Length: 126
Image (cartoon, rainbow, N blue to C red; front, side, top):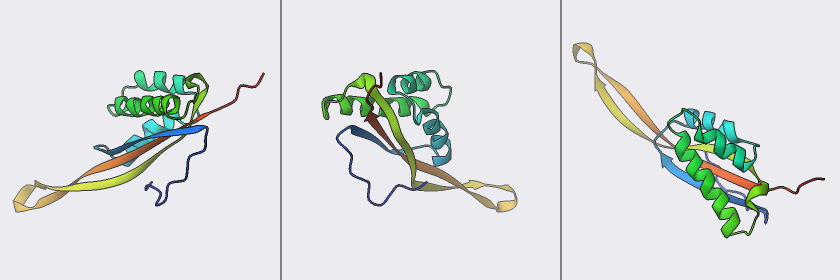
């Protein structure tokens, strides 16, 4: 679940938004990203709006940013957008220690994640 070394170039019908260093584990973030993959943009926003997971609101903001990028920067139609890709990469990990019994300690890891959302315009078939 790591971020690709060389991100691919976007096509003319695609736009993206990246959320970096968000304080949630990549595994939990990937569960929310899985909810929106291959869905229409409007359906994905509605799904994230009513999700009970804490990180869903940050994912929704990132998706709305990708939609705005598609509309303003690439001139794409927002109603014809589909979430083509939503992938998660791991970032830094804060290491902390917690006191345990008999003078021992335990390591506590607090992971961070990256999220990349790519939206694509699809042609309507009659």
